[in-house]
Image (cartoon, rainbow, N blue to C red; front, side, top):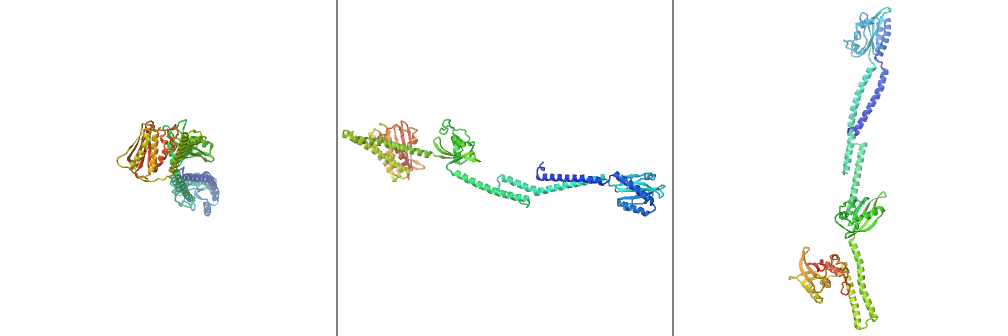
Length: 615
């Protein structure tokens, strides 16, 4: 039962048990004392008979002295014993003095006349029954009475009967009384213990229950819970300590939450992805960037050959496990217990990954990974490397030719003036080519660093395109290529444009079209008005019917030194590979866009969109 599991129930049972043990021990010693101190009823009757015989012998000698009988009666009354003398004619000659029943006791309260007749005959009669067993007696106490004959003075015959009686006080009766007393005391002790238990309920258990409820509330997150202090004893001190502990815990939780929010804010504001794994590879903590990466990478089904480079259909990987591209590095960090740095290629992206072990008592319990998308940096580094290689290659060819032809002139290999002029012309053409390359490099560097000077003014697009058409009409006619210009009837104006730079754009586009278009084909220049980002804009298109650009090369044609025709000879008619990169930078400086559409063998179309309001 619940009461036996509570503190009050245990105290109640303990106190009751203690009271029972004390009462039982006391009763054993008390009963032993009663047995040794109080005679039994049989012993009391025998003792009283001996005393009666002795008194009778003395009274026989002094029966005429009535004062003597009174003295004997007074002496015996000290032992709650009295004497009655009855003559042979059944006459009671003296009653006891000071009886506890407050009435005159007569001999017939103890014995019948027939009993006395036997006493007169010399027998000794005793009566140990309560109220002497007489049917008409009204005695309140239990008596033991003994009747003995006494002789006359001459000791020749019986003069009467001496009845000696005493209130019965046997050990059995005393023990019965004590048992009743112990029952009463036990019931009183049970009631007092129960009352004391309920008192403890209010003084001890209720404060403990309040502490328990407060502890439950704190365990549920209500750290402001406090208990009332109703006393100054140990329970009051416990309540005060509990409240102090609650305050300290609340402050600690607030500090931890503050630190947690601070750390969470730092993680959320980081552009790098931060992911924490346990030793089994399960995700413990991550910021939004890291969570996005986990979701994207775990949806990729990695091939066995190239797990970090090849992407397939969506997989069924768990969102809480380490992605496959990070697993080799993760296993290395776990096994070697040291920080590692690597670059991971996932599809077209490049990620820089730094993994460091997390320790718990000198045991690696997990790994924290910091990841950054370095695709652009990787591309720029590759472009820089390619730029150096391409510039070296582009300069090496004209320099080699200039060196060879100049050595031929020095060595007088040319026998005629015409041959010397031809060698000089090659040197001149190659120097012009080097000059164009250096000029394009300088222009591109200025554009990319934002130091290019643009002179903006209003530009009539129709007049500008007609002039560009006339400029390339003669060159296209020489190559057998038809060039046309399709323009609208209404005027097209750009509020802010650099005419020279736009002419450089058109020159590069038309020069590429002429070099990659066969004789008999056609090049067309078109212009129209359209909407761009909700505003008026002008669309300029340059279309040719040339060789076209392979689809895999289109994303890279605006990069420096990139040439779709890898087998094309870098002769005097070849480009530098910087034209389209310069075109893109100029168009972006005008806040416009350039796009390309091409199919191999069907031609290419470059579309330029320029906002009318300009910069």
